Each structure stands twice: as C-alpha cells, then as structure tokens.
Image (cartoon, rainbow, N blue to C red; front, side, top):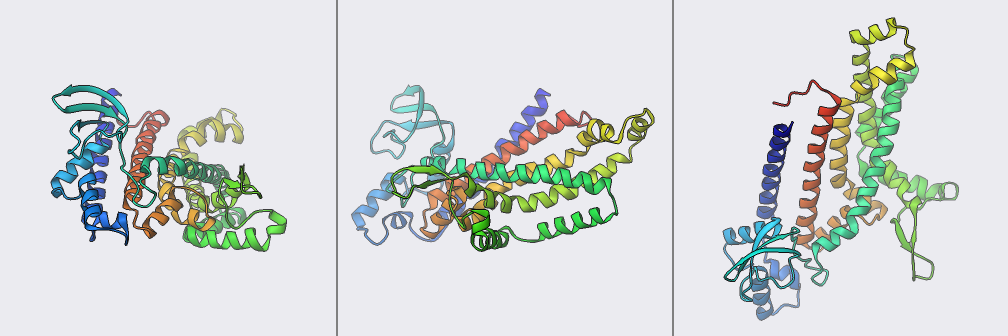
Length: 357
C-alpha cells in the first residue's frame, strides 16, 4: 500500500511539473512586454526598466524559468542582496532553514507573484478571496448531481424499459447535450426574471452582497441555487446514465442471485450488496466532474455574477492580468491532481480487487 501511494504521489508531482512548465511557456512566449501590460499607457522608459528589473523580465528565458520554479517550490532559495531578483523583501512567507553566505534556503508557501492590475495585490490573496466561493458552488452542484443522479439511476435500472426509464433517459440525454453557459442564460431568464415573483430568485448575485445602505455585507444563500443547479445539470445526467448501466450489470452477477435465494428483500439486496459495487464508475465520474467544475464554472459564474475564481479569470483575461490567470490555472490544476489521487485511494477502499502493483 505504501509503495502504491508513493508511486501515485510521484506521478502527481511529475504531472504538476508538466503543468507548471506549460503555463510558464504560454505566459512568457506571449507577444508583448509584461512590464507594459502592468503600466498601461502611463509608462516611461525608466519605469518600465525598473519593473523589468524588479520582476526579472529582462533576464534570459531559462533564468526566468528558474525564478518561476523557485517561486512555486515549497523549498526554495532566496538572496539577501537587494540587487538580486530573489531578494527577500517580504514577498516570501515561510521559515528559513539555513543561510550560507547571502543565500538562504527557505521552506515556504508557493509564491504566485503579484497582480498587474490590482495595485500590486498578491495573486494568492485574490485567489484566497474567490476560490472558497467556487468550491462552495462546485460542491453544491456535485451534491445535487450525486443525490439526484444516483436516485434516478436506481429507479431507471429497477424499472428498465418502462416509461419511467425512457423518460429518465430522455431527460439525462438532454442534460448532457446542453452547454452550461446556455443553460445558465435560460435559467437566469426564466427563474430569475420571468418567475422572479414566484421563486424570489435573482438573475445574478454572489454569496455576500452589500445591504441597501451599502455599508454591511449580507449573506445571500438563495443566490447559490440557480448557479448550483445549472452547474450540476451535466454531471447529473452523466451520473444517472452511469448508475443505471452499472447497477444493471451488478444485478446480473451470481452473488445477487445468491442473495435473493437466501430470502433477502429487493431493498436489502440493492442497499447492502448491489449499490456499493455499482458506485465505482460513479465515483470516478463525480471526481472528474468536480475537478473540471473548477474550470467549467467560469461561464456560469460570469453569467450569474458569482464572485468566484472563474469570474476572476474572465476579468483578468479582459484586462491582460496574466499573473491572475496563471495563478488560477495552477491552483485548479493542483486541485485536479489531488482529487484524482484521492479517488485512486477511494477506489482501493471500495474494490479490494484493484491491483496495487
């Protein structure tokens, strides 16, 4: 088990390294001067040169890549010389391990650098403010999809080839075929505008909003309903289909026949024997969808004006705030890798037949 876990961790580290490299190349091979992006139209040559020196934009590409990895690595080096780009001027938060000459080895949190457009605000601070809202939205959506999807999938399997089964299949197929941004527009218009007096829901809004006096933030949980439902439609359809097919396959196994022969009721067979084994493909699908929701929530958050990392990415792209974009991509990729690693371990727990070699 330990060897299996170490191999999975090694694969995760290599995958993350590949993502970091691709993100760096996309960022630094883009046309244009990052210093000019930061200054806009108000730059002078002296200001531009100062920015290039501060952020290392005037260094060779390979050197900048080394700085980039050094910033992201939990264990990194920094200089105590003010003229050095890695000079510790408070940008790193961590613990000094050892200092040799003017170079210090530090154990720290990854440094995602600073926003171009938010007055030098740290990217980690921006992500820290918006990521919890996206996690809440994605978690709510996946819970809706998991609960309703498993329930509908079980009903569809138990009433195979009946009108109930056919109706569920039509609805789930429709759910998979409709893009999230289109569903978001339809749901916002119908339930947030046309039926607003009935539903009490708004077309847009975030978890916290200013009160009528513009002084205090108020919790608005109802603003979560529409984006969570919209974001959960497609995984709901997938979970329903997978649950149906998986349960039908499990119900044909010999041990299910044996359970019936022992006198167990249909409910007992489903709940105690069939359901757990039928959940394996569902868990895989849910994990993949949860991780992809962090990226797929971009359009949903933007349409519903939900203050999450997806909406922040769109605004950063519009203003060419590339550190925000790269930082958000790296955080989402890291979470995607960690979720898949967790799913592999859950798989081992659910199915002892999984090969650990």
